[in-house]
Image (cartoon, rainbow, N blue to C red; front, top):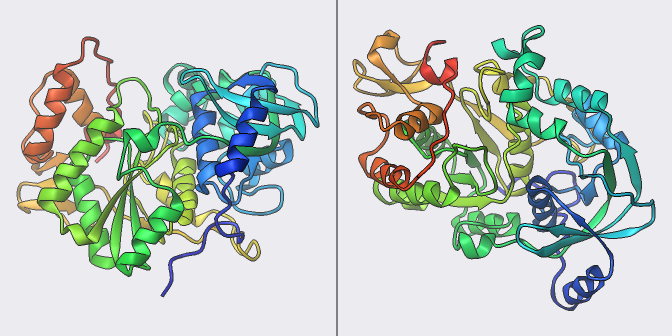
Length: 422
């Protein structure tokens, strides 16, 4: 059997230039109107460059943006769950070519042919937030969402802070940033991941999404996937996170330690991808599955509160949303990668091992509730980490990292992470 095909029915659509074509476009970019872009847009560009966002070839038009928010599809009917837009205050004209610049690194990331400019009013931004970021959790109920989200939901804060206009058009990507240098052997393109899986003879591949250090629950999810698939792709976000989250370099070191000591290495591949988190909960779970299809992944592990933040989302809303997405959209337009839905997992003292709500008959007093938020809160406050929460070797790495911090960010404990909702 073969790996699942890339999303969109057009193969891997890669906008990253190479060789002489790249050199010529870089020279051209220096003479174009320079537009500074956000870290989020930088990650989106790199994903378009390496084929991770196939079939996208540029930033979305207003018709695409509206259709994605309302219908989970691009304007042409292809499944897509989260807007990929470019915001700016600068005045640009349809037909104009512009250069997209990363001000932090001082490099041109892409050139873009402007095909549409559309204003984003505060009402438009609020509408996008309600469609994409509002969930079924207690902090999204009634009027609570707009009381809490503008100060506590990083995705909503990001959207509401966007500039006056969205600008659409195809891009020519000039750089992958510094990810290959920073994460050698881990950061990889979809083509490279596919080649790795094919070399191993894999066709049924599960992906484990990570933005937190890998604790015992993550390890358990990965091993469930190994049992029923050819292998598991532990795929970490190496782009930007919110304040208080743990840097990718530290998280990858932890995963290396776990793979070395607690996995059959032949059945595991570690990778990194260059996006920023959007913290869109269920919608982001769908996005994770969509771009993982481009990496050759057939099954996306979706556990409790996948990509969640605070208490904006229901515990298993990210699983349930897969049952509501449009289907039978046409050749290549459907989402093929399927969710591997796993119940709430934990360590149970009476079971004497990892378990889930489906397998453990005991009460929550017998369980060690595992979550990245709970782990970060304990470590940031210098508190003791309860036994069976994480592997000792990993906790050594994390405590070493926290000991170097001069400023600590307060970690908000939501109900799901604390176990209050169990």
